[in-house]
Length: 169
Image (tube, rainbow, N blue to C red; front, side):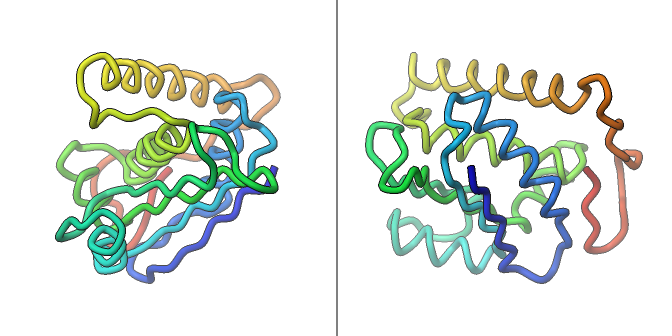
């Protein structure tokens, strides 16, 4: 499995190794441990351009998923697709929710991965509930994997203001 983390924004530092490790854990939990994935961290300006070009929507959003295959299956060469996350939007959402930025970015990664696997909350009703339930199970699987015996506990800073441009995981 190949997970590529591309940081295309400069305002907020994000620990790419932590994000890559979490992506690998989540891919395994989704049953696609060998899938290739790109996670692209962008600014609001960058995601707004993608949102306009591909979804015909104005302004920034928090995450956009670009599947390589159809029906939630990896495409050619085992490539699952790309998950593009606006780190600026994620930071605003994290502050509003009183949560660490890293946790919000992880939630957006889960959301994007579920879209790549064929889940669609925009259909409403049962599909939205199914996606939300799967997201909860993935968060639990990630927490269990990160707390596994023999694995050092992640270094975490207290929630709240962490300084300009810092991301706590």
